[in-house]
Length: 359
Figure 1 (cartoon, rainbow, N blue to C red):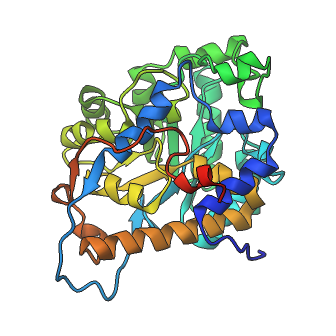
Figure 2 (cartoon, one colour):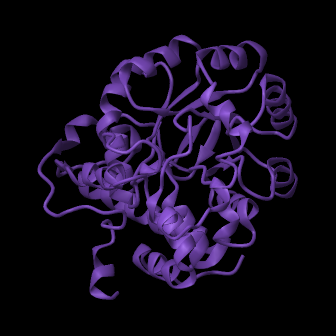
């Protein structure tokens, strides 16, 4: 894999913007309706600040961990994004190769190409399969069984996509992105029919760790645990589904309290920088899903750029840990962060302020 000479995440984002046409750029950075949820995700992250400790030995900082029994070089999961192939021709395979090369896990969306079985053949290794229900129970059971046979180490059910949202950036251009092309089809209604009985059926019939993605409140988190869900995944779909939700990082503490350490909690939604990852871990997440930066890197330079983005994130994470006075992930805790008023207005790319200055 060729080395890509990006030195900052800013450069990766800028190159992605240069490489993508307006339709694909808007699909990547846009949200639902007023895009309030999208902006709130970043505003929420900007509202948490650090309370660093001094005079701790941080001469060696370790950021590795494990997730569902597999090692992670950093506590980051490449979150499921549909139609990854529109950002770079290799699509899901390119992401899989980057994840394997660097040492994190991919959560593969069911609306990506190549399909999940091809990706498993091309790039063997631990990987999670995320499914949108486009068929009945027998259809779902067949896909779960095939995912297990293909070696997937986790199965993720997305629960916040009961219907496809109104994404006005696309509507105003009369553009239908690949991931939205089936949203009016009859089979998309299976997403709306998904219930807690679906969760019970999966747990009763399949021996694979189950992640429920789209949890936002304590009540649902507690019920997930009671029903045997293996990972509770806090998400508002990157601000792309229900508008006017809380920032995911603000929903995280109550979910963590409800789960009470019984299963891992994952969170995504606006996380773009190493410092963002640290904030999520301080508030109780076991790992952070990062989707837009994954797609931006794909658009900037394919698998090699995804690896480079992860390398930069690793540097940012370790730097933040050292300056916080923490040498291992287990030292991160709620006492190291507090909530304040953010100092600037937030938008989807406000984690990269130098973009506005032409860098």
